[in-house]
Image 1 (cartoon, helix red, strand yellow):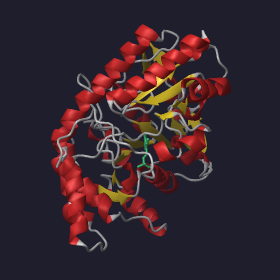
Image 2: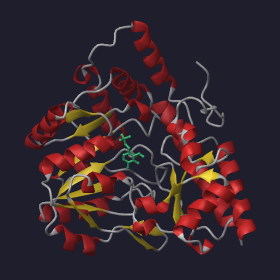
Image 3: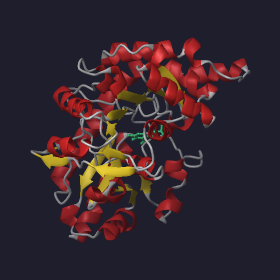
Length: 391
Ligand SMILES: Cc1ncc(COP(=O)(O)O)c(C=O)c1O
């Protein structure tokens, strides 16, 4: 198998990729450089590719049994990487984290119940609540002293009559890796008010030097029936199209109820390739990830430096984790529709419109830097040129 080089550009056009093959239709232009949906432009680790090839070679693709071979690998990974002793018996198969969030909303709340989210945040957090006729309560993040923080006074007020909080940890799109004191305060407010924490930790392995992802359920103060956690190898190892994630629910009653909803809907199973990739990634993927992380951290450093030096009309905090950058473009002075148009038509880059992350995202755009440096450089040059011709 070829040695991994993250600088290599792999042509994804024509591979049936949403990011590349839907870009022309979505952005209305053939020549945009896609830097939007959150998958990376890198092949998955060789260990994952080899395991998938071996699975194909075996030739029989009957129903998988993740508990018999894969969830020990998940538990070992969480223990070694995050110091969280999660029992494989707490794990429930889910076909993606967004599906898991919807299942949690349907299982643990009733129509009309109040559910808190912390915008700007990953768009499905809004739709999972609203599409299920629950009441959306916003506890917006605040930008203070150069970084986004949680507004705990507002949270304490809103938690009083809420049933659930959907936490994004680390946070998409603002790139914060929540600290132990922050998570402890959040968990205390939720515990005091009987609010269940649904913790989306899909970006939990993508954290840069100097920061540490702490699973909220691993906090010493956490009580087992206070949190359900969703993890997946999909962002970390670039296997999002395999739709395989794991719900980790220590409390027996909550786990049974959650699994029952999945069963009622006929979605409590996983795809054999998804489970094969998950096992290989968690068992053998660490050396690859330990090379990817400094590469992404260098991309983050390059991007923030480049923008500060060359495009002062755009502001960006250096991401602490994730491969996503949250660009504050308000100084360009464009209305939201004009801003989105500017990036597509003038800069010819396909980014996510900040407004889809909530009204707090007005004037912002999200850029995915999970790509080879030459691609990132090209995207940044395009933005720089467009901004200098604009001003
Ligand atoms: C915070 C967050 N949760 C969930 C997802 C998607 O998860 P899945 O594809 O497993 O539904 C993403 C993808 O970008 C994400 O950023």
